[in-house]
Image (cartoon, rainbow, N blue to C red; front, side):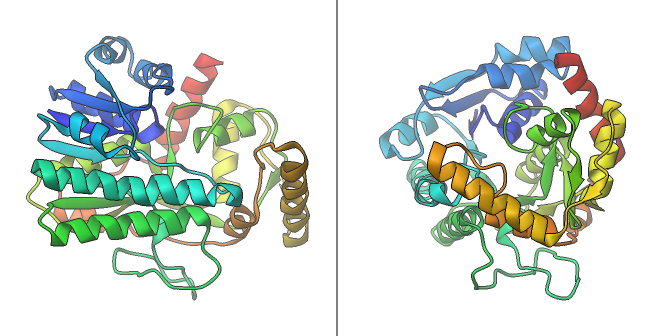
Length: 335
């Protein structure tokens, strides 16, 4: 049996489906308030088989900040996939992200060490890797650099990684994956799936930067293959394509059959936007649509190499064009 944390999130839901469809018994950790219908929704993307597979999940209530609940969840488990995290560019959630992402990961790896788990997989982020200073491609050997340009989220995930590496020194066999921007069907109102809905509703602006994108199915496939391999105590970037935001938005718009964003948002306009959202957040307490951190990211072009996993395993990426079409079609089907 395996344990998956974050089972109602994008990666967790698709991972659980991948595991169950290959005959693996899955126990999924969730908070008591979590909405498992989000997971059912992701499973339905895979058709009737997905709908039937959902009933095979063994759900268990627990919390990354409750060590005893983690020990109970891990009891009888052989492997652990840690996908659970608090993801936000909202700086006001910094303390919460540090607690959930760093302290929660520390609790989980400590429980895994106590219970003698055979292997552990941690879903990190490209946000923990070095910045591209001169246009070079970022790979697994690019390292974190100090400075003020890191978001609270990236700092929390970097510190979470440090807890995993610490645990490997204490005997835990682990692999870390660093996905780029993950594209796939999920809750259209949050995370990367929200991009699809935003374009559909009439996004007018695009930013001048670019980054890496990867299919959620490739992320979970890579995780499973790494856990089934003899590889341990290494990190792997999962990135299917490096493209500009303009190209990505245009492809999404084409798949959705709506008008593509046509106005280039320049630096001063983006600066005004995040400042306005900051004021709106303070007055009304609403989640900002753009923050200083996400604005800075949108202006940068960073390229990532996803080749290392291909050198180690028989692994191929889904063409990003197919990923976009498949995701857009499911959006249209469910809206």
